[in-house]
Length: 241
Image (cartoon, rainbow, N blue to C red; front, side, top):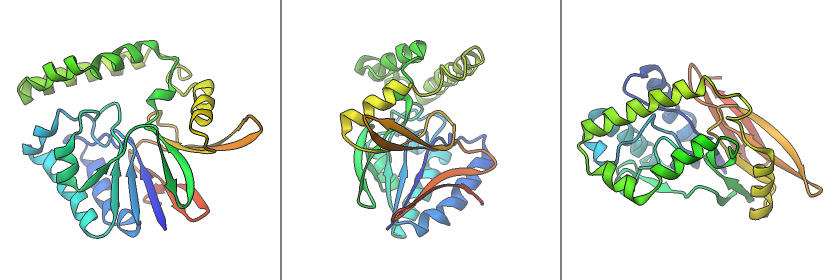
């Protein structure tokens, strides 16, 4: 069975190159796979499922649905940019929802799947913001506003976030080693796949005498980062290669 993983595409109407690359990927490697997992941040931001009335958002859902109809099972885990993705998007794109920090059988191997932001425990400012926007009150108030007002608010927040990143160290925005070890121990697995930190790579961590393997998906730019799992052959790839 061939399983493919992607994350951190940050699709937007303005980023036409990444959108075209993803459409090509959906018609290529994704259709060759039995399973496609999208581990968060498919969109640069998701304003709520009523976004499906907008041409760009609807077109992405339609592209995903076409790939699903061609025979690929598509699994979606929300990230920090598209955590408001709900059942209407899942239905329109014919995707199956996967909760963050879920253990799935990947080609017979129990594997912990995460978006990855929960491993970045050193960034206290990010965690304060995350706790705010994940609260029911904040989400209810946000979704009660018109789409254009929501878009303005999110774009302002995004600009502030990008400015704040300039003053953060690389280590602060990367995963915390203790958090990684805790995740392995709590879930009782020796394999993990995540994105979020935009640092494509394969790592081995010795935890309690066990060699644990962790694959980190990269973000998308001129090429797309994906993990290809075919039986025991697990390898990070770029698209196009």
